[in-house]
Image 1 (cartoon, rainbow, N blue to C red):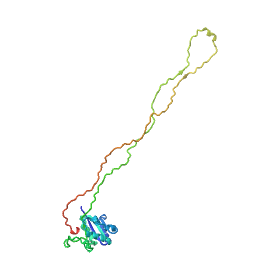
Image 2 (image 1 turned 90 degrees about the horizontal axis):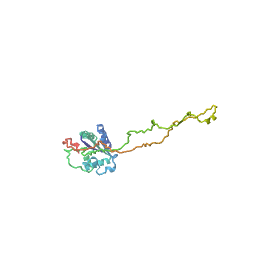
Image 3 (image 1 turned 45 degrees about the horizontal axis):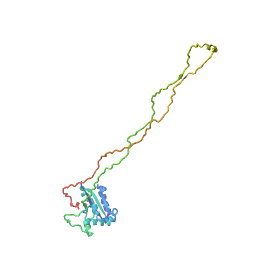
Image 4 (image 1 turned 120 degrees about the horizontal axis):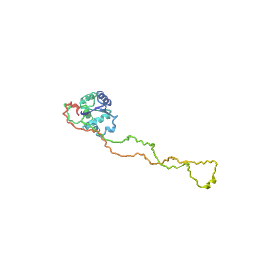
Length: 259
């Protein structure tokens, strides 16, 4: 679908605003309607060379620029509407109801004659002007890759005690009482015979294994985090606007719709 821009000039800013409201009520989008007046343009902008060509296209004539500037200086307004080419006729009828300025007649009255390329009999002068130049801004996306830290898991190091059986050999010493009988042949011992009762006690001893435990540090376990880097290829799609020119058959609309 092709889009075109319509420009209408009104001596009173209130008239332009009424026309804008009528367009909106008729279904035209508010974002496609613009009203330029002393509230929206400074004096420097109004007198800026090439302002109107920059806004409406290079085909804006000097006489049209003069009318636009003088109208805003005197408290008027310039209304613009961007709309589909199929809606141009309906939009211009709505704008004409609010009596826009005849740009060529106003230019003549200001002493800035319009180019004499058409005759009034065959080419009626439009009160609402249709510009033929549009600016299409082409957007393009770029892939920006950032980084964020996420938790991939946790590691837990736990110290605990286990037991295992061990054994060791130790030599234990014992001492016990023991009686031995042996024959005595020495006759001299007879004189030492003691007929009294006598008791002899001997202490028996035995060694037992005594177990004690001692601890020592066998090894150290160092717990730390070790970092590493890896290269990851991120793939996605980005959008880009493009433009192409298509030649269309000649348009036979009412010549009032063309500039």
